[in-house]
Image (cartoon, rainbow, N blue to C red; front, side, top):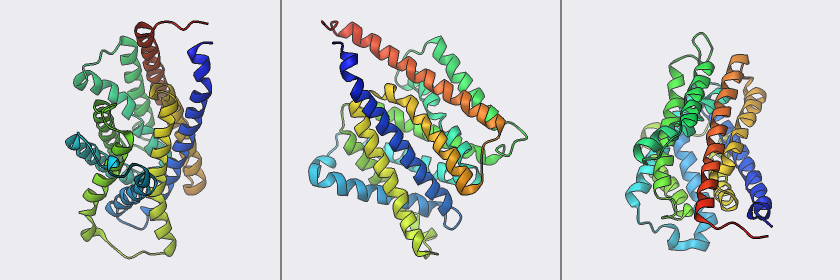
Length: 305
């Protein structure tokens, strides 16, 4: 029996976990967009990281103890956390000024930007077909933010900034992949984000306008932390390149949430641009998967029946 047949149930489990994780992220984005109506953005970012950190410590601390904190790449972990804070500020700001679906779709530029950055920083070779996919993906974003549309404004720079920050975060993550525990990395992401955003609290702190808002603040961070923990488990069942296409199911969730919660729904041109962007991202992920399979065939002997 081939290795691919044996691993099929594990891959399916990984796919299911990714789809659950992005649904959880979408609910967190719903809470973030709701809270921007009442509170300053730095306060929302602080809650996102602080309650994320508390959940990670509560879930992983009793098992991993000091192993969760130990790192040989402290500078890289701090840089990753800084990029996540920057990306979160951009994205939460985008949620305040833009529809949820369009903000999320433009933020999905990140995988395309990672392809560009991997050439410069990781010295990877990118084939012509992948370059075409990257430029087609950028064309999809231009379709979403076309002049004359409701999306076309200065605010469109916010999700683009998020994509740039998150792509840089992913490049640093790939540099320490296999060298650091993913649980250590998720701990430091929350810790650095919480500490940095804490610095802004004295200038933006304000009393809660409703007791339910306390639940929303806590839920925002805990949903983010839970989603990341589920993603880590998903990657234990299948490689990231195999699971990446299914992360785009988040766009379905945010389109539905945006419509039912805020009355926003992408128009025809935006849907076309989203489709182009998703298609480009899926192509790049599938191409990466084929590349990994070819590399494994070179490195490993074929299975025997």
